[in-house]
Length: 207
Image 1 (cartoon, rainbow, N blue to C red):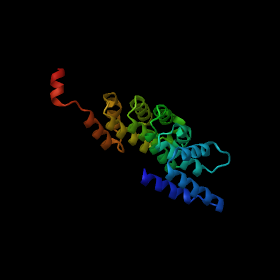
Image 2 (tube, one colour):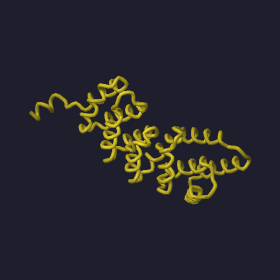
Image 3 (cartoon, rainbow, N blue to C red):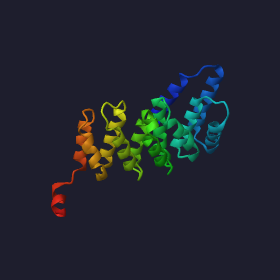
């Protein structure tokens, strides 16, 4: 997680406004480096403390999530649905490592919510990475909704296509076939369909 953690802390450092912010920032980094049960307890208290900047909660949730501490779950899900793509990406990374059984359901709810489509890119990618029972149905439902002309959310649709190709579930054949008719999705959909094709030998066996 070193690279992702450095990206997060560099971004958080740019949000510091006061000397007190710098003190809090350095303390968080110290707790993250310790990685002890006592340090995690203090990070967990940070998640629910009053009047803390968002970057404080983000660092604490990221560290706890990557350590498999379920207390980070709610904060990470909120960040997964944030308007800032960088925060969404950080949350998705930590959620993928948290190992919480609620994660896939939360990501599916965010991905399939038509009112939050603008922020669905990272939930979609997370679903593909998780390979959970919720992943394929949610990606199919999201992609079906986006197969309309001139959708402004074609990047979300593309992530669905790529995710379905990676998951290799033949339930996705109809929606991927439809996606192949959309210029921005055609190449990825064709590649995904190629991955879902039944090998020649297996077709003969099933005949």
